Length: 271
Image 1 (cartoon, rainbow, N blue to C red):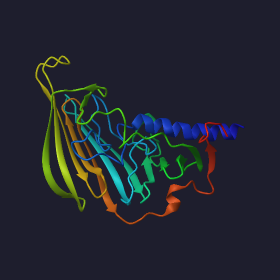
Image 2 (image 1 turned 180 degrees about the vertical axis):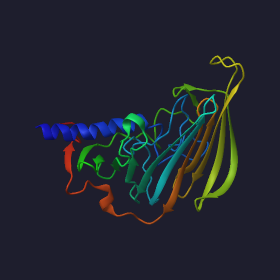
Image 3 (image 1 turned 90 degrees about the vertical axis):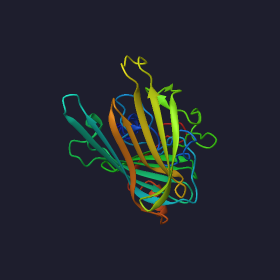
Image 4 (image 1 turned 60 degrees about the horizontal axis):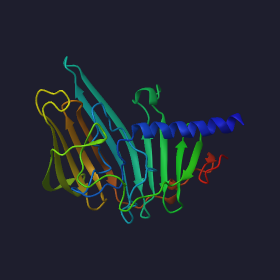
C-alpha cells in the first residue's frame, strides 16, 4: 500500500511542479495576430516561463512532426547592478498524429529543482488514445490520466489579440506590428511585435512602462519557435526551439516504458 501511495504521490508532485512552471503551453500556438501563442507568456511581474505541460488542453497539430530542444533564458538586472540569469531546457517531440512528449529538466528551479542537477520529468500527451502520462525516470513510475477536453481551435477563454498584465487583466494600450518573414533555425518564420503600454499612475509608476513581446511563428511547425519578451520590471526572457529535426519520431516515445509502474487515473478512479 505504501509503495502505491509513494508512486502516486511522486507522479502528482511532478504534475504540480509543471503546473507551477507553466506560463503557457509549448507546442500548438496560433499564428501571429490570433491570440497569445503557447510559446512565451504575457505574464505579470515576477513571472518566469520555465516550461509547460503538454497535457494542458490545446489544439492538436497533425502532419507536422519534429524533435527539438526548447531553451528558455531569463536575464534580470537589479537596482544595485547585480544580475540574475536562469536557464531552463526541455527536449520536445511531436509525431504526425499530434502526440507530444516533453522531457523537462528540473535542475535550477529552486525548491522544485534537484540539488544533484540531474532530475527530469517526462510528459506525454496522446490525443489518439485520449490519455496523458507523467513519467518519473528516477523511480521508474508513471501517472496515467485522461486527456482534458479541448476547445475549438485551441485554448478557450483567451480573446484574440488580447494582452495581459499581472497575468489576468486585459490591457487596451497594445500595439501589434508585423515584422515580415525571416529564417529561424532553418525554418521560415513570420514575426510579430506586440507592445503593451502601461500608462503612468496605473500601478504607481511615474512614467509609462512598455512591455515588448516579439514572436516568430513557423507555418511548417504551426507554432512559435522564437519568443523574446522585455519588461523593465522583470528583465528579458528569450525562448527558442533549437536542433530541429523534421523526421518522424518512434511511436514508443509516446508510451510508458514496460518496466515503469503505472498508476492509472484515466477513469477517475484510484488504482
